[in-house]
Length: 176
Ligand code: 5GP
Image 1 (cartoon, rainbow, N blue to C red):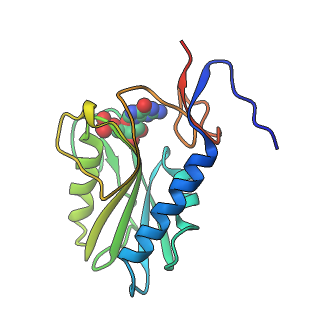
Image 2 (spheres, rainbow, N blue to C red; image 1 turned 60 degrees about the vertical axis):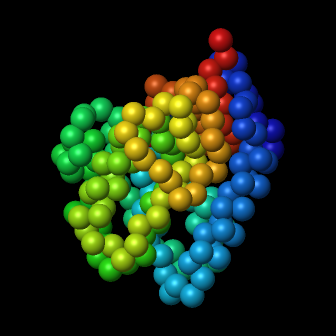
């Protein structure tokens, strides 16, 4: 299958490099959780849905999937503000791996982490597709990062640009 590259998007990280890196992360996570019966993978919608789907298929440990929503507006770390936690999210005493699309200012990730910790998981680790450390405003660190990138707006592989381009198999930047 050939993939069309929309005129306005330039490839930053090609699909084969993403596939390779997701495989590496899957192996690292499998090693780190060796001996675990199960991990709960919490995918942050919408941006992480493709990354999480590919990642769990590279993890050699049974994964229970769950989903939360995060919005990029709002300044409060509450379930009604920046982070929307499912009422049925059951992670008490569980080993949780949070899968997020991108850490930019760090505010979203710090809010999600605080909300999830209130639910008393046994452990909480964070796996991010992309990290923009130069954009950080509040401390936020992932345990696993697929790619560290400069402070550029990106789209593709689950991330959108005004609601579009999530389906692209690569990570791209708007062509200027
Ligand atoms: P933060 O709270 O760290 O500033 O923002 C994190 C969220 O903002 C991400 O989960 C993502 O939804 C959105 N975001 C940040 N940078 C980008 C980007 O370059 N492209 C897209 N599509 N979303 C971004």
